[in-house]
Image (cartoon, rainbow, N blue to C red; front, side, top):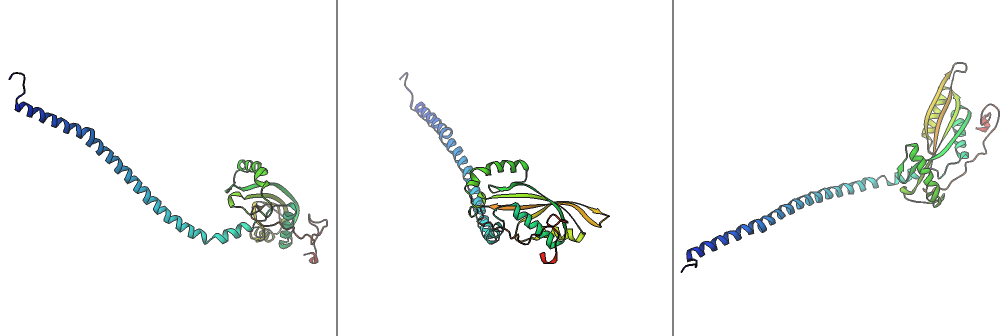
Length: 247
């Protein structure tokens, strides 16, 4: 009859519909799923690489913990070797002991201002950082720390004062004085600068050296006043003229 599809035409139409459904399914579902699968595989690969990296890092961290633990006592001992605070009395006494032990003549001593060299777990190298840390440390941080406070390293406040020592002595005496500052094991000191010239009239080196004195607030080491009973005073030296009995 006119207007009706033949069986062959219906089959062709059904076949075309089936092909269209297959094509649509491929592009709308299968291809999308394949793209998602590729993205998932890529993310999985990256996560596996990250897991491998973290696992390797964990092994290194464990090794580092073991390595660090070997030096824990040494580090603690080093921190406790710092005096808890700086005083001019203690610093002048150490300079006096250096003179007695090395034989140099000290004409004058100029004390420098105390500035922080360690604050909030960082060693301060620039004057700007030292100035900023000093303003902050003068507030709440130092108020909660007493001489016998014991805190973590990140909370400790390390301070330094630089003393300029005008002196004269033989070459050996000067070497001995520099070694004394470097090797003294009861206080933390260092040589900052040396400015000496040879004086042909006396045959000695004359000029100045700068010595840094250090302390660490928060390490739990109580302050002890130095024994100054052996101080002698005279006119030939800033600390006096010494005899064998005074040494």
